[in-house]
Length: 124
Image 1 (spheres, rainbow, N blue to C red):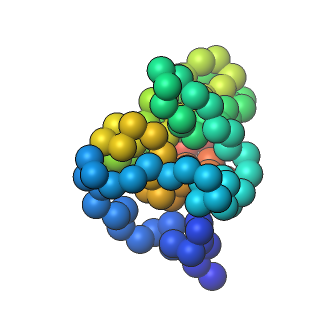
Image 2 (image 1 turned 120 degrees about the vertical axis):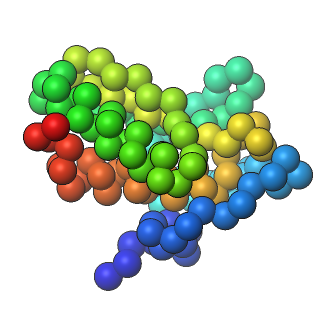
């Protein structure tokens, strides 16, 4: 079964995003936010972002998860803000070019959840 976010498979390539691409708002934003229920919308510097804090059993586990998110981001050429602390990692996705949220951010949030659920990063 392929899991989807707003009708888009998680494994699908991200859509090109240009400065003229509109950021998500209103019903479109609410629908995609419902697809990633563990994530919350936060505003920083007048930009809405997706944020989730993951609980970690140790600092080495937090570092391993951070490295895994980095690999996901690099493979997609879409990079989040990551705060790594003892016992937790906070990830924020948003798109600079639209100064807000794009469908790609929700796809990446879902991929980040899949990485966390898979626990491949624990032994790093």
